[in-house]
Length: 481
Image 1: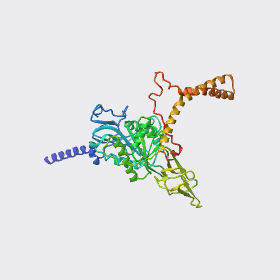
Image 2: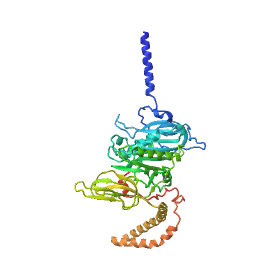
Image 3: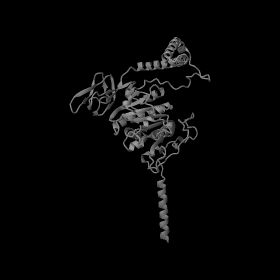
Image 4: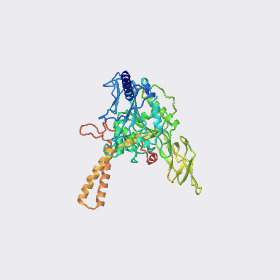
C-alpha cells in the first residue's frame, strides 16, 4: 500500500514538473536572451487602431503604464524584457499555419522604436543574420527605447528559397496592402498594420537579385528631410536617392509618416559575413545617433551620395566576364568587362559611359543583348543638385495654379465651341486660342498668394512634404527592391 502511495506521489510530481517546463516563457531580460527556450506557437489577436509612437512625459516615463514599453501583436512588452512573438497573416489550413517570429527588445529606459525587417524577398539571407547579430547583442540596462526585429518577413518564400510568395507575386509591391485584395495584398496589409505601424523608423534589409550583387548601400527619398537625416546616421554607407517603386515597404512607410530606408548588401542565396558586418555597424551607428545605445561608432570617411545612377548593358549574347570590382571608381571610357560568344569566339567590351562608382553588378554568367551588367552611381555636384531640387520645387508650386487655370479656360472654350460647331478642328483651334490669350495673365497667377480652402486656411497648410528628389528612371528597376 505504501509503495503504491509513493509511486502515485512521484508520478504527480513528475507531471507538475513537466507542466512547468512546458509553460516556460521567453526570458524577461535581454541578458537572458542567449538561452531563449523554444516557445509554443502564438498567433496574436488583431489589434485595432495601433499607436504609431509612444508619448513620453517630461520625466521620460511612457504615458499610462510606465512598465509597458510597447504593446505589439496583442502583447504588452515590459521594459527590460526580450520577447519572441509570432505574427500570422490570415487563416491557413488547420495545422499548416506559418507563423513568423518577431523579436522585441525593450530597454529599461524610454526612447524611440526602431524596426528592422529582412527577407521580404525569401531568397535574401544577409539581412537574416544581420538582425540576429543586432538583436542578441543588446543589453536591457544599456538600451533606450525598443528594437523590433523581423528576420524573415516572407516565410513562405524563405522555406522555398524563392524571392516570391507561393502565388509568384512580389510581396514588396503590395504595401501597405489591401484587406480585401489578393493574397499578397492581405499579407502586406496584416504585416503593415500589426507590426510596421508601431515603428518610429524602419530599416528594411535587402540584397541584389537574380545573380546580381550590391555594394552595401542605402536607398531613400532624400527629398524628405526626415529620410535625409535618417540616412546620414549610417555614416559611411553609400546612399542612392529615390522615392522607391509604388508598393515597396519603405515607400509605404514614408507615406505613412515613418522615415524608412532600404539597406542593400550583397547577393541572394548567400550569407556574406563582410556585408553582414557592414550592415550591423551601420545599424549600430543609427542607434547611437538616436541615443538608443552609448556605443560610439568608429570615425567614418565621408558618405558617398548619388542622386542619379544608370545601368551599363551588354550589346551581344555570350559569356559575361567582369574585370571591374564592386565599389570601384570608374571614368567615362573605362573597360569594365567583356561578353564573348562561346561558339564564334566573337567578343565585345562593356565601357563606362559616365564617371562614377560601381554600386551593383551582375555575376559572371551567360547573358543576352541588353542585359544590365553594371549599376553605376553617377558623380554629381551636391550643391548643384540641392539647388536644382529647390528650383524644381518652386517651379512645381508656382505652376500649379497656372495649370489649374489653363484647364478651366480650356474646358470652357471647348464646351462653347462644341455648341456652335461639330468640327473637331474648329474646337481644337478655339481651345488653343483661349489658352494663348490666357497665357498673358500667367505672371499675375504666379504672383498671387496660395488660394484658401473654405475654412480660410491656405491650401498648402498641413500639405504633404513636397517630393523634391529626382525620380529614379527606369534603369533602377533593373534591380528591383
